[in-house]
Length: 328
Image (cartoon, rainbow, N blue to C red):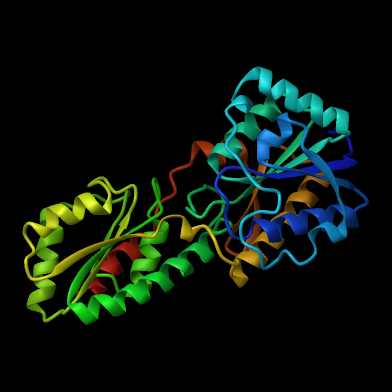
């Protein structure tokens, strides 16, 4: 692969805390290595619309503490077409860009891999940025730690009012295909039950557990529901349970998009910095169609193909077993 001279960076898909520290790291690592850098606004949409601008060391000053992404993000249906990709490619060539860092999740990586296969002269490196923590090749993804801490803070506050009123709260958290946030938040907050996409939980079993808790003199209960649970959303589950559980006043809270926002945690600031630094260095070494990740506290390169094809991220069996034991 030819030596790169100009690098572009974009964020795509759902925003995640830690994206800004990663952008900062990409820009300053590139500049340190005498590379020119351009930022692309609104992900692949900006790539198609040629919405790019030169970035310098001061372009990323004072952004470590900011949530979201200074480059903004968007969903982009035209990029899925050959015509859209051709426009994006011509815009990159016009700007003199020969390497691209994409920060996002599986949808972002799918587009990046297809684009790179079609136009291999543009080197592509992926950085896993998604609060769902569901990408193969990295133990943690950008935003997961911050989102989990945001959920824990919210549940702690809900626990106060649940206990004051002897209430049963169903709290729905993000995780359409992954229960990573639900599992860790549930253990951290002492939830009486955690409903996950990865593990089927019968409503009858949930009701039985809640009745056991009441017999054990529990005055309130918290049930965490990942939005992708097979029983439906928190409202549907709460309605089914309320018919059988008369000893609690049942309430539902859906945390929604507040889980995406907020200043990134120290962990996500460092993770974003490490992954951005590693992405640029991998491109300089001639790598492409790869994702930089963190495993066993070491940077690891995984092909985008593998990161996508082995997408099913397995939750830790010991954590799921422990959650049941500790909820009695």
